[in-house]
Length: 173
Figure: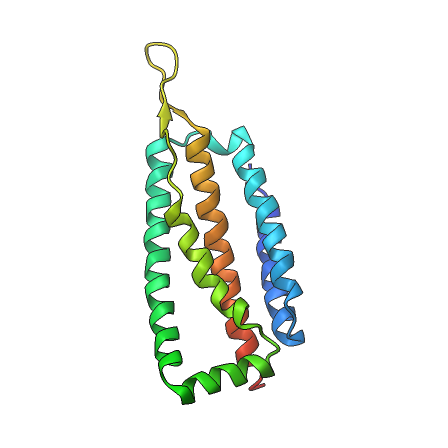
């Protein structure tokens, strides 16, 4: 699963939509990628072949690493927004830049909110005991859901953050 060029096509689509969204100053590119990432990640998690050779421990480790990175992003982004919104001059500059870029302040705040979602999601059961003497623990639907939320939100945060940044920077070109 996901071993051929289709992976590259999704990421090329994301790159093209980032550039188109910045150039046209359009929100629809974000909404389209929300759907593309949703279907892409759901297909990954719902396909049994995606979990061949994976263990619950490794999936949980990946999720913990992703949550750590998102917590760093939340801290960084929160400090930037706090600095901007505590100074009226900087607040006016940001709001003017957003208006010029036709960028909603909700879309600017969205990466912060989406980054916090995986930290609220904890599965009830991490692994189910398989049958047989040498059976390994089966990956539960809770772990799959945790993985889905992490990989989906991680992609969305990065995409929305870069999209917002490119749209604001576009006004200089």
